[in-house]
Length: 113
Image 1 (cartoon, one colour):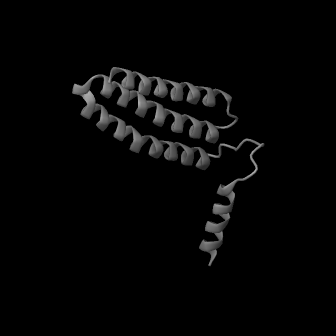
Image 2 (cartoon, rainbow, N blue to C red):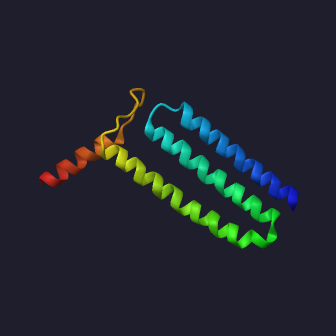
Image 3 (cartoon, rainbow, N blue to C red):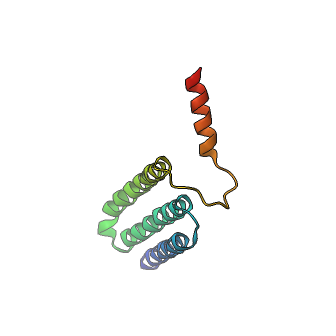
């Protein structure tokens, strides 16, 4: 059991490391949010579950914490991304598709009718 917990913790640490590289390397706030959130969600989940496996007395507490992170981390990412969009943070010029403009046009046309 100790080896399985150590492997899960190492996988989680790898996800967290890749997420930190994504935050440093990606061009705009929206891409950074996505990389950071996906990697921190999986990284934290695997690390916490790995600790729960290594310490069986903590497993249920670790599982509850991991599920809480699994549910709340994407919600907070959505709130941050929406706030960035509403405050006018621009996309990277290299981005090809901007679905937010299509959504704004759809809402404006719908309100006019």
